[in-house]
Length: 273
Image (cartoon, rainbow, N blue to C red; front, top):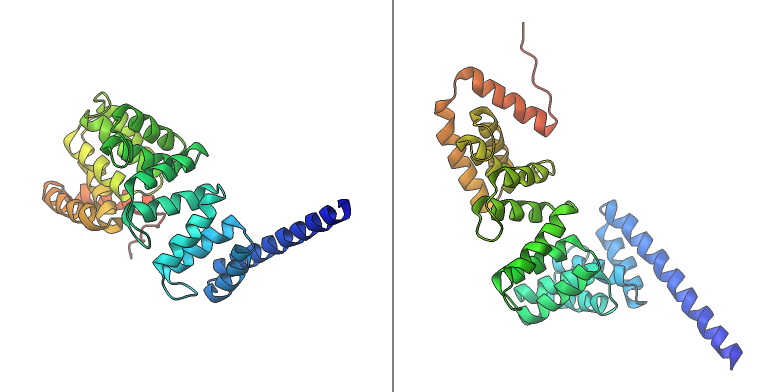
């Protein structure tokens, strides 16, 4: 009986070591852009029960890299990882449930998995749980708990949470109105090149709300948001920038362009003599 137990343990250890090797090989292939090999290696590790590989395999199926796009199979693998307690797998499965991509839409189940991942400290899950609590989506509406979850995610550097916290402090609809504090959270997200944060902080500098009135800084931030943003943020930032431009002198526009180059890590072109 003891011998059988030892053999089973040795077999399990061998499988685990093999799965870890496959996962590492898949990760190396993914980083090099070899998605076919990444799929092959991660599939082997996922089938051996590795939750990290299961999650990554789901991502490949969801994006169609290295394999045909299949949202149902992606959700299946996320669930496999989620049920093993892997936070990123729980988060991805919750996103699938929330959007109804590859699985029946279920806000209650999504909130449950966001909470599971949030309790493990995953910042993105804390943020999504916070939104669910603010909106009453899949859970009882609880603005105070929502604010607490989003603040926790913001404090560990999750840029979307930092922007959301800034919006709440700027508006005063959930937290006490505090424009200066809102601007500080936007600045933290701007350091991570968040287009949304660039837009909102740009508006604050344009209007002098919570920060000093600074049209040059406003133009710089709005320009960056227009260049990097998507959808509504890109459109709104472009409109605000273009409306502000005629109010600036040639010298101020040049200062703004210098700020943009500095923020993006680019060097200004030397003027020809």
